[in-house]
Length: 122
Image 1 (cartoon, rainbow, N blue to C red):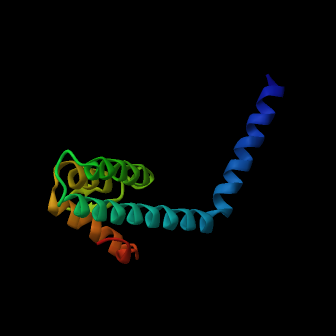
Image 2: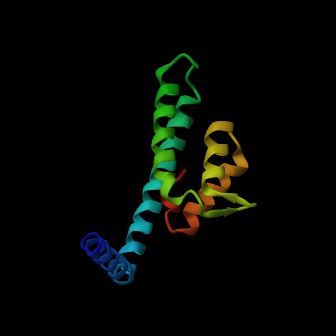
Image 3: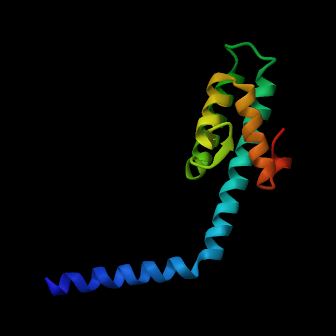
């Protein structure tokens, strides 16, 4: 029993030490995640706007769906961040992309502005 516990304790100690010394890295990772999300949001907005002139049967709508999926994936690590109105980033992103909710889209664009990446959105 003791032999099994020692490696586990060592892993816990390494993990705990890593958490306290990587605060700057965590902030950099969060910034990179936010930038990626805002970039994907901007890409989705451009694809949606370009597809707006296409017919529903055209490939533009397929592209918008694929781009939306990329934005959803980029949003996942940030999904619980608040964007106002009692909504999380996940809720507002889903409402904007799936339900064409312009208020929700405004909130996620504002989120990108608040985190310093307003130029990546429309």
